Image 1 (cartoon, helix red, strand yellow):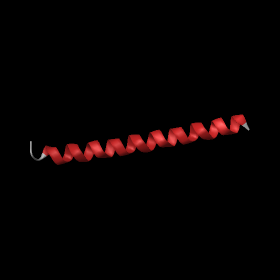
Image 2 (tube, helix red, strand yellow):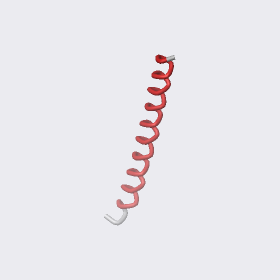
Image 3 (cartoon, helix red, strand yellow):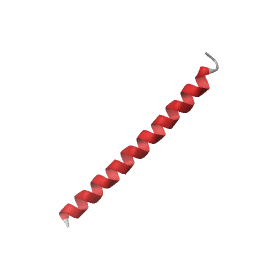
Image 4 (cartoon, one colour):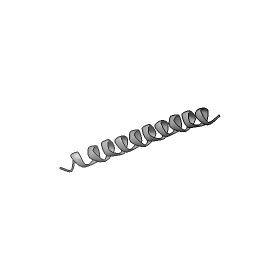
Length: 39
C-alpha cells in the first residue's frame, strides 16, 4: 500500500487542479456571456 499512496495523492491533486481549472473556465465563459447579454 505504501506504493499506492503517492499515486493516489498525485491523481487526486491532478483531478482537483483539472476540476478547479474547468470550473474557473466555465465561470469565465458564463460571465462573458452575461456581460455581452447585458450590454
